[in-house]
Amino acid sequence: MKRITEAAQLEARYDLVIIGAGPAGQSAAIAAAGLGIATLVVDENLAPGGQIHRGITTTPVTDRAVLGADYWRGLPIAQRFLASAVDYAAGAKLFSLLPAGDEPGRHAEIELGVSIAGQARPVFAGQVIVATGAMERPFPIPGWTLPGVLTAGAAQIALKAHGLVPQGRVVLAGTGPLLLLVAAQLRAAGATITAVLDTTPAANRAGAARHVIDFLRSPYLGKGLSLLAKARGGPRRIAGVTGLRAEGEDRLRAVTFTAGGAAQRIEADVLLLHQGVVPNTVISNAIGCAHRWDDRQLCWVPIRDEWLLSSVEGVAIAGDGGGIAGAECAAESGTLAAIGAAHRLGRIDAAERDRRAAPVRAALERLGRGRGFLDALYRPAAADRVPAEDSTIVCRCEEITAGQLREAVAGGATGPNQLKAFLRCGMGPCQGRLCNLTVTEIVAQARGITPEQAGTYRLRPPFKPVTVAEIASLPQTNAAVKAVVRY
Amino acid sequence: MFRRLPDSPAETLRFTFDGAALTARRGDTVASALLANGIASCRTTPAKGTPRGPYCLMGVCFECLVTIDGTGNRQGCLVALEEGMRVETQAGARRAVAP
Image (cartoon, rainbow over all chains, first blue to last red; front, side, top):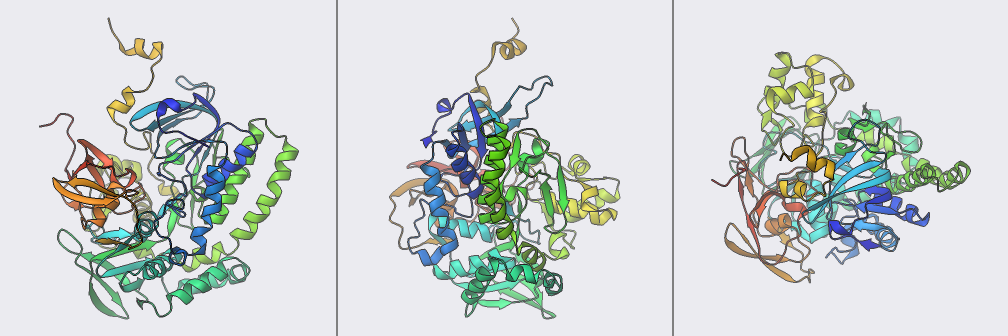
């Protein structure tokens, strides 16, 4: 493995560029290096592991019982990745990806814009694997923008990467396996958890029941039982929570909610919200990949073929960025994407590709069993996805409320892209990462159409903010200079 | 807001936040260093000036935007803390030219 710490160390061209160094990106890199493919891995994080195995090679949490066996499963993957023959740019920013093509401005190969330590470079790639993983589903409740309100995933990252535990009166709220896992990990690390507020709708159990046979045959059963055992004797858990609000002026002071027909109030210093994870589709959206609305996981997913190839030529999408399936499936799908890329690069013939892919597909089938049960059981309530109160902020960056969005739809805005023009929602620095799903569902609900019909924001590069200095550091061709310089 | 587990042996780093001298550990990001020092809010929004602090810690929410050594709009959760860094609250919108 060659560490790239400056843009000048990048090659001008790679056979394969992998975006992300979580389980999918690392596994893709290991497989590609094994096939002798010249590979670059570009990752935003400072160390490998993605979010699920965040800080796996650097964590200050030495007691392995705190983070648990599933976390430490990431260590052998990271060790193999770090020993593989690839170029690895950590703490790097991918800000653009131009598909290949004959249209003006395009090139014979995919062109990526990479910035490292303030210097940007174009990199060409024969094939690209996008492995940008998942992010937590937005949880738009009144007061969710107050300092002191974080996601449960953020608390988990603080613990894994930095050995930090939330202090004072800590309340967790929401639904999903990660909420229970974070509660157990924080407790093992010595945090005082005042309450866990469970928003899982009771009616979900009926929907989950028809997936129960698959679940009982799946690896999730063991994990679920051990998680429930850890939760036993734990902090106060209140079920059937609705109407969640975070209260405070300039920071969080209390959490209010309704449970068992009674309004309740708990004073809190830290509120950790979570209602599942969804694919991070910023790059796949911005480069023009076709997506569809997944009604089971309530999110947009890129459309992919059996080799995980998107609708954009040469761009495959591996891991949770292509649909939520968990870390172990992500690792297998990274391997599968690399095998497909090797064939398209002409390194292996179709028979060899299929032979190598067969055991990977079998593993994906086995590991993916039981996902339908989890999706149904932890399906977040409609009221927690589409805020009932008009004053609730939906777009955090531009501070646009649910009421403003509904008013604009009533006034004729037909979809998320018109709402951008009307209200600036989704146009702040997060580029709609934290509001796009909510906006899609608000439009769908208000117009009586499906989320698929409502559509989503059309994103564009840069995927991440770049400075004028970074743009200026790009090497310029004579043609480009002549186009703007006048004598 | 956050406290450090006792088994954190990493080197201590000094930095400032809005001029106040603070310490954190090597391996911290700017955002985790602020949280470990009890700082919940690190910017105010351009739209209405309301206070915000780190929310996702994984680079997607952009709530931990701060000014680092004079450069604004840095994602605090993606920047490794370095000795002597000057971190400042990012108040409202950025300007192309300093006022």
